[in-house]
Image (cartoon, rainbow, N blue to C red; front, side, top):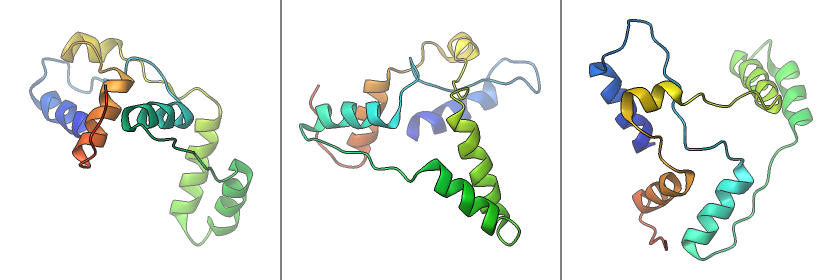
Length: 120
């Protein structure tokens, strides 16, 4: 989160054309299972990941959507994530801000910000 906040603050002064889009990401796409593996290695613990089945979330979005627009929007977002097309193009990020952080470094900084002692 602090990485993203830093990029947003730096974007205010970035020398880019108005309306330019800069995807923010890490050095590679990672899944939640991979993030759990990285965090577990850094903490010296085993971390398991549980997820709510996408079908259940989709159904909840359809049922609750008319009364709760956020549920419909979340369902649509999850459907899009499930396509596997959600991968940041960090080319512009690298041009404007330098190389994106590695997933390992970003997870380590996040864990440290929560007060955890991380192993490298």
